[in-house]
Image (cartoon, rainbow, N blue to C red; front, side, top):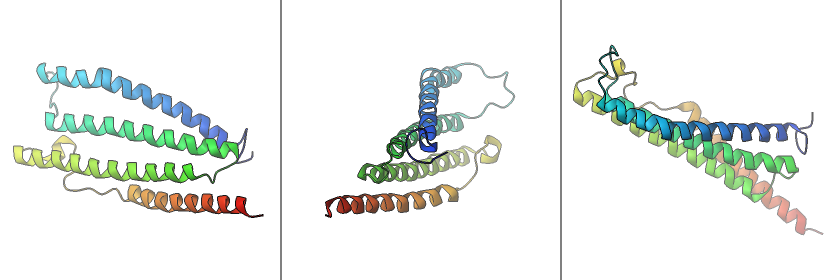
Length: 176
C-alpha cells in the first residue's frame, strides 16, 4: 500500500479522522446536553444511596477538564484531517500544514497548563476543606505529563520542518 495519494494509507487515516471527529462531536453534545444538567441535578438530589459520593470540588473540575479535553481532541483531529487531506492530494509541503501543526502544539500546551491549574486548584481546595486528595481520586501536587511535553517539542520541530519545506518548494517553483 502506498503512503501518499489517493487510495493510500494517508487517505485511510484521513477517513479514520473523519469518523473520530464525528464521535468527538457526539460525545461533546452528550456531555453538554446530558452531563452538565446531570451534575446540576445531582447537586440538589439526595445521594445517600452512594456510599461515598465525591465532593463537588472534584466533580466540577473533572467535568470541566473532560469537556475541555473533548474540545482539544476535536481541534487536533480537525487539524490532522486537513494535514492528511494534503497528503492524500500528494502535496504535503504547503504552508497551511505548518500552521496546522503550530495550532496543534499550542493547543496541547495550553490544555496541559489549564489541566495542571484546574487539578492543582481542586487539590488545594480539598486540602483547605480538610479532605485528602487521595480519597477523592485526585493526585496531590503539581503533576507534569512528560510525554505530552515531549510531543509538544516534537510538534514544534515538525511545524518548523513543514514551514521550511514549504518555503523551499515555493523557491524551487520560481527556479527556471
